[in-house]
Length: 406
Image (tube, one colour):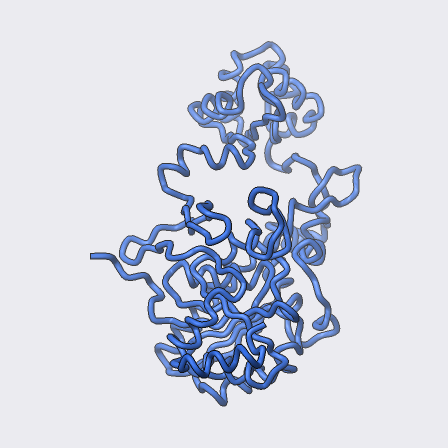
């Protein structure tokens, strides 16, 4: 018998776009929630639909790998929210929903008449989460920000780069991959609260405040020690050698981190105890930290003779933390990920069979399951209206004639 998923029976109306909101709703969808993704080709179409990479290099609204990986297991509904009849459809959906998600700048949902107070009049116990850049209220609550900007606002860029260089930021919209985990957890907490009390609630999530949690010890270091941490490149204040070292092959690297003197002894044995490893300046951690500029090239002279996989295996066997600096090809061929079936293969109507990241966790009693690929624009208009909302075919056709589905 097929096991049920954890969130079966939960219905989500998802108005979010780009990164944080769609990924939050995806966490719910992957665990069985029925998520209805609301878009509009003319006013609030998700910009990821026109963001590459595109399958086979052919641009198209339904060919973005970026969009596809954020939105599997969802139904796609297009509505022109400028039309009263479209708002009526939204109200019908809310009346049958448990959660409403949105990630617009403050004021957008209010202009549509879909603020939390409006939705409570439709369904008293509805849960709504707003995931704006900096939360509601305050001098900057009206500011827009994508993840590339958000990582600067929350301090990540200040810590990323080389000591003598400018802030470079992390690859891509860094906070977009972190904030959804916070948002999904809060939604689950609200569903549990409603289960116990019968009451819904409004969640005002600030992407900025969630992103600050990426900073590790920087905030504590400032509040306790008055010290402002800054860029260190690949260095670490408590580890040396610490960095990504060139290996055999084109642009192949392995990251190594040595924290203790015991790990240093194990590291040196792997290298064959070269003469330079016995120098007094490298005898303890403080000396290795002080002389990191001289130590790192010596490590690189050894690693360049081996593949990154060989370096990782030798170091890990000796009890030294090390890992291949992987590219996308490595990740798709990784034996550990293959063993855990990390990638779902779903057959998209336009892109064909494509891989999707699956959740990083495995629930033994309620395992997540792939059900359908990301929706094409407006793919499920008829299904949502006739099957989920119970409209007649005549009523649906009439709405099409009025251009409600945009």
